[in-house]
Image (tube, rainbow, N blue to C red):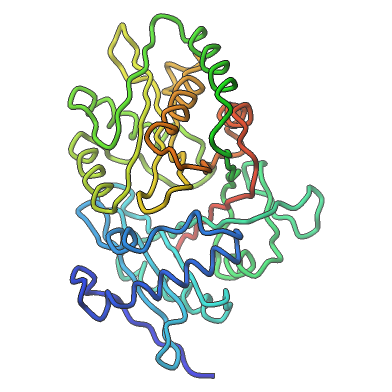
Length: 360
């Protein structure tokens, strides 16, 4: 069989370069992978968005490699290296034509090599699974959190285990068909509003954070990196300030994406107590993504999660009238947020597994 060779894409900033010309091929590999693994392409980043997302920044260095065989691109390795925090971590994404195990095996070895060259000791990634084996299944591998299982006999989990990766956590992958019933949203919102009481009010914006809320938005993002369940994943607090929020919004615009954010403001202190953010690719009409929802520890117990989520979902009908599906992921051990999603009508569609590998 023809030998695999690897080529690093170092000239992606120039849209006319030979490296940039490979991006459509990489994109098609990802499309086909998602069709095999999930049966749809809702989760595939649009092509032009992918071009921008592959470029690095002061916050994240991005390294991309293609695997070639006989002059044909048959695989891709993408690595994201945080620069302001979590500097021992590298996030890894691999794809191979037809999920070819030989190609993926070589990409895993390359990932180890690149991580060591860049002084990174922990590799991290997420993988989707359409189903979840029953408890007691001899092939079931349970997450250390005690919630969520995957089929360890499938080729990809077997490959992770072979290369010394460890399953650390699973998340439930769910989809809410839209539009959601307006009477259900109204009833759940009213109930949450009554429990929140007079000390909280809802504030919201689209794509750009008002200056008065920049610091509050940054504090919510910092809390997301520490206050939500991470199992035994080694993740440090993400350093967020007003400048990083502004940079995030700049990249959102450059990647032709948008978002709506609803937050609960604690009136006596002015603190943003909780929030939810829904993102979407402007090139797509039907899918959107519930990316983050958090209520700060000191403000829990007031139904703020349900309050902001019902308000945000109702707003989607205004800002994205063609939307049909809202995708989200929840740590299985986060029963409070999971209960909110079940009440809203989210349907379980699969499991996502979180893997890490510590290099010696």
